[in-house]
Image (cartoon, rainbow, N blue to C red; front, side, top):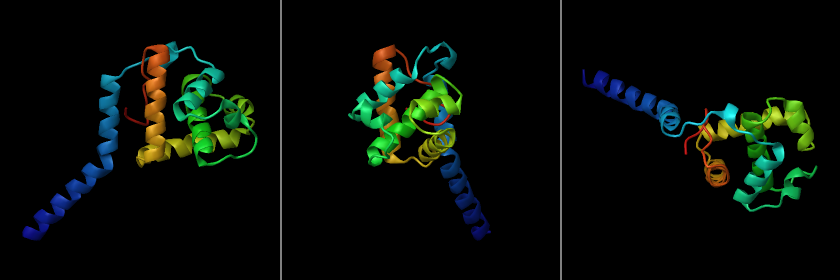
Length: 148
C-alpha cells in the first residue's frame, strides 16, 4: 500500500510540474487582459520596442547575416510579436526581416518552445519587451504562450 501511495504522490507531483506553465498562463490572462485586435502596431514599432528592450541597434536586427545569439533571439522575438500583433502572414514578416517565410515559422515555434521550457534569456527578453510595450502603449500584451 505504501508503494502505491508513493507512486500516486510522485505522479501528482509530475503532473503539477508539467502543467504548472499552463496554469500560470491562465492566471496571466485573467490579470493582464488586452484585446490584440485593438492594438494598432506596425513591424517597425515592434522591432523598435524589441531593440530598445534588448539594447541593440535596429540595423543589426534587419541585417541579412545571422549575428550573435542576442541578435538572433531578438529577431525571433520580434517576428513572434509581429505575427501575434500585426500580421499573420509569414511571407510579409519574412520580407520585412530579409528572411523567407519558413524562417519566420521556425522562429515563432522556437520562441514558443523556449517560453514553454522557461528559457531564461527568452523569458527575460519578453518580460522586458512587455514592460517597454506597457510604457509606450499603456497596456500589456496578452499571451497564449507566456506569463509576465
